[in-house]
Length: 206
Image 1 (cartoon, rainbow, N blue to C red):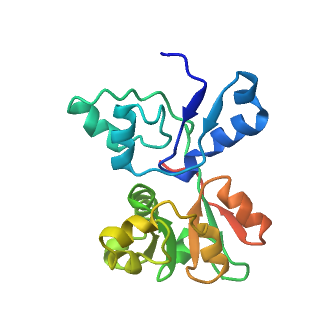
Image 2: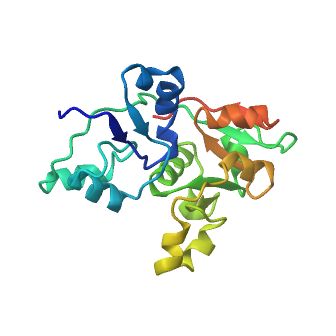
């Protein structure tokens, strides 16, 4: 690898930022004389273009779309994964009457994006609630937008303008009553607990 002192390291999914925040705040990059710009988001389309052109050196959390591109001759190198186990917690408002997955029948569960949304869809289905049979509703957050319905109305420049905006965390959706619950990984469920929400252990995903 060529010697570099300034590194562009955007992320695709903010859940992949945890390790980078730890590295940055520990002083590790500064110790090795590196100036790393990592706390900004990039689309999968821009990620493939920017890595190929050398505009960015690394992208965090782009581990799904890269597979297909690699099979078609892309020169991406997939370095590794910071998460080797998935253990989401169920986050609800205190006094909601929700004590586990079974109590989500007929409720609204907040989720975001296609990949995380499919994870939640599968987790619920494995535990007896079928989204496709309207037994539970997934309400999907979209980048920079309050509702999936609103996102569907945006096209072109308006949709582009929504990209990169800081998103309200899903636990805040639960707190504010926009959804009944959310399935969250650390550190999101830790922030939710600090905010007074109830955290329910549902076991590891299969």
